[in-house]
Image 1 (cartoon, one colour):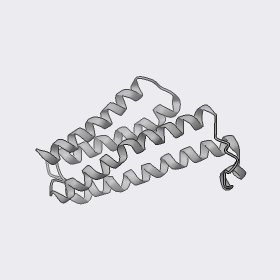
Image 2 (tube, rainbow, N blue to C red):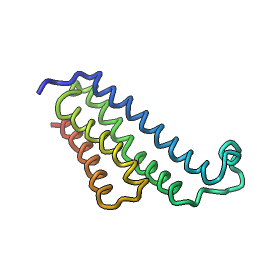
Image 3 (tube, helix red, strand yellow):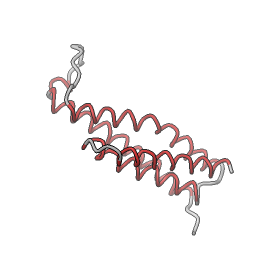
Length: 135
């Protein structure tokens, strides 16, 4: 297998930022759909929060993403700085990103078990990145 250069791993970090914004947009769109654009544009001082199923799922999927996102960024940048931005580390990063992309529609659709397996796949991707970094 040919080694992937550091720019590829850094591109995955860039795409992960796009995914972060996808989460933010989905969460915002679901809340706006439920509470209206005046609520979204306003200061939200009234304490109202979306209560619908889709808005709740979008918020929880976003929170779940943000739980592992710092670890992904830290590992990816550490791999680059350590000069190990190829092979196993890049594969782990790709697995993490792919699983996180697949996770969104599974969570929004409320699909159990498969969603958990996909989350586990993303955790394995992080573990592979860690192994590539320290061993």
